Length: 311
Ligand code: CP
Image 1: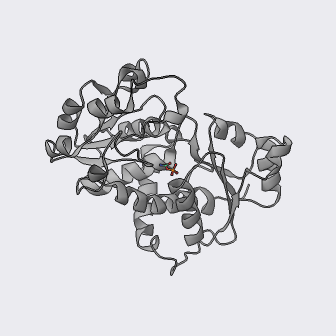
Image 2: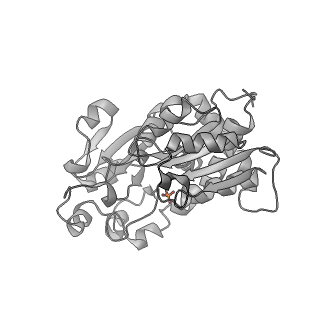
Image 3: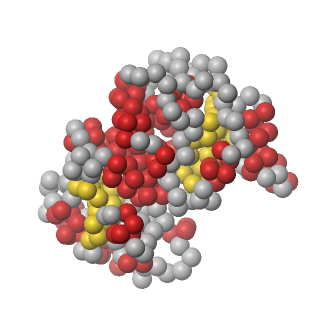
């Protein structure tokens, strides 16, 4: 494995080359035996401090980053926005500059504003890792999704993957389209017209499906997205029942596509984009995704923070 990693931040998939992503996958593969148990603490981040700064709710990303950092022997601080001086009017940048002055090596940021990590990296010397910025990117989710597919199929080249649902609000969709296209996968999208960005087919070079059954027959894997009702200002769908009728993944629909495996980034709205039975079926890789998420975040922290030469 070559020394050094070219990136001091992880802002988005767009900044990573195919070789960078392969490097992260190889490192994650190496960490897989260590990510389940606290019995083994690897020394890669010993003496480093990682701050988790989540300004939007999260379970999987926040906890897996914390586990990943601890498995690599880092000190981890979870910054709580509630009760901080943000309530007294301190800005986000002042807050993170204050934390940096305390000797922080990396900040993992989730924020509702698209592009916020780009703004922060202009002013902070520590590493910035994007844990989801608005509707823009969620790079570690795409890395763990790509890794899950890579482990399952052995290669992403030519793989037919369809992303289903609320593409409009989805940073997961944007990061996954970037990553999958980088590896020569064929990417499809399927959802109601109100939840697909205009010009999506042309600007992303993806195949558009209007009927879910057609997408399920075409794809080898589907990434089912959560309907992000918290980001919808007006009624973009007539009702949840109608959405489920046309775009919900049910046992009956899955039975007609026995070749298919499915992913979902979580959290899931059961009875809307899929049913509980579908999530628990042998065709579901959802639990695998969560498991691999720790190894992927260990790999990102090691390469971006642990291997960083002090500036
Ligand atoms: N997939 C994902 O980002 O989940 P959380 O919001 O629970 O972190």
